[in-house]
Length: 185
Picture (cartoon, rainbow, N blue to C red):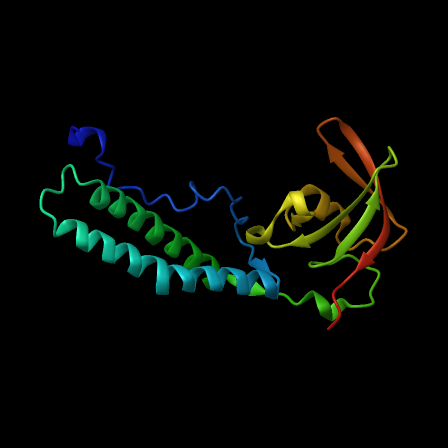
């Protein structure tokens, strides 16, 4: 195989492009729950302590086999090493600017803040339950929405029983807050 088809650019340092996460708004902090912070730290340590050394060992072994131009283990090992290094840089940057916010300090409150689990109803009578989390923790399929999302911004600082307006692509909607919960301390 010709090297032109397997050679990658050395300028693949666009850390946020391959992650698929929204950028943190300028001038704001990277808020995280304690569980989200732990998950990101665990992933970083897994990459540094286990994944990267294993790939380095494979690349070193493959390099010792001679011709590297057609050595799949070497080529794909180097690619995987770049991916791991890119992810390590990304996670390190996110942790450096992280501000861990413990939502349990609001336990018993009926007002919506970061970390709240909120059950609300829209104008069509559909009920939804969401938990407001950090950008790096979002998981919409499991009801975890980012604190910068339009729904979270509409709900923030409202109380149980309040109705808040939400601008949607199809027009204005009104959300009625049915329940606000926080984890126990």
